[in-house]
Amino acid sequence: MNLRLGVRGESCFLFQYMTQFEYEITKHSAVEFSKLVYFCSDQGECNVEDLPSDQLRVLRDILNERGGEGWELTQVLVGKDGVVAFWKRAI
Image (cartoon, rainbow, N blue to C red):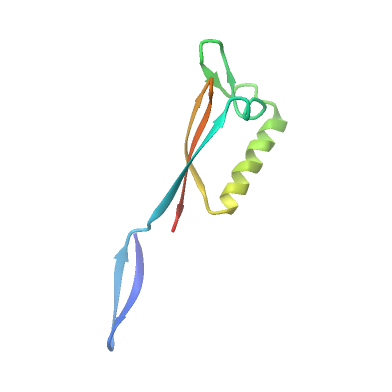
């Protein structure tokens, strides 16, 4: 919750308001992310074990770029066919 100062006539008052958000969902094919985030077995089990440090830097750069635009990564769904990322930012 946040507080705002309101003015009505000669009166001042504080009121609470909830921050509003906008959301964005991005889809990325496995081809697009094949060098970046995850490794999947033939059974579709994915993990980030043994991820090379250069790929971690690429991921960090993407997160920092989106974060610089005010977006917060809230969820990632990873599968053998690709990645779905859920982002939010305050409006």
